[in-house]
Length: 263
Ligand code: OOG
Ligand code: MG
Image 1: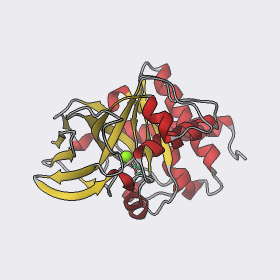
Image 2: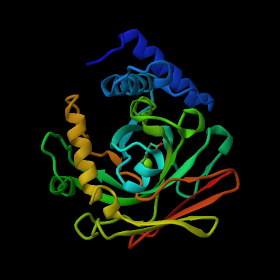
Image 3: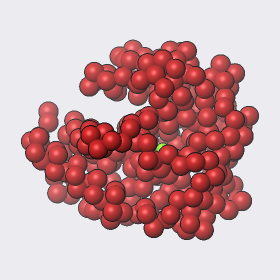
Image 4: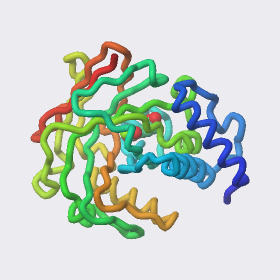
């Protein structure tokens, strides 16, 4: 049951979006609103999405987060969540991010799915996801919680659009029927050193199941994953903190590499 009024949802969404655009951290939402539930939290996230769309930003995809044990353990939140990806989150392959435009960025290695057909739950499964996938592509997601010290609980992080900030895709596109999504290996390098390694199965057994779960979560709001969406299926490894001067490369088995640097 929702506990917040429409006005309060809009207000909290504006506060979090201001923290995002100004790169100024705020207190965790539930510190001031302890009663907030998941429904309120998604209502706040959707309010932010609607405001960005009304301003002319295009929503180019979605992300699933907290889908692997390394991520859940790192953040002490044990339930998968989703967020939206706006057009300006996307960086060109090899692109630069001004570290001072973000609060306390971290990077994650992920497999992204690009869809060619809509996916609608409930009952969506990994097979349907593969059939609706145009191609796979390696991605570095840059997350940046708007909360002080990168600390949050489930409702707070959902309201904050799942810490979405930037992402870059690149390397070699993968055929969804040819890549073994469970065994596909990734190496996340920071300044040439491998700092995290993992395999696709870390993401709820199979990253395609994560995309299916997303479709099923969206069904609660009678929403679907549209054709042509880019879906980040979730960090395979723990996230790695970055600062100005860091150069990040993700190598994905059979799919080349993708890089981004922080300046
Ligand atoms: C929440 C976002 C998690 C992922 O891939 O697990 C995420 C966070 O850890 O700040 O993007
Ligand atoms: Mg992520």
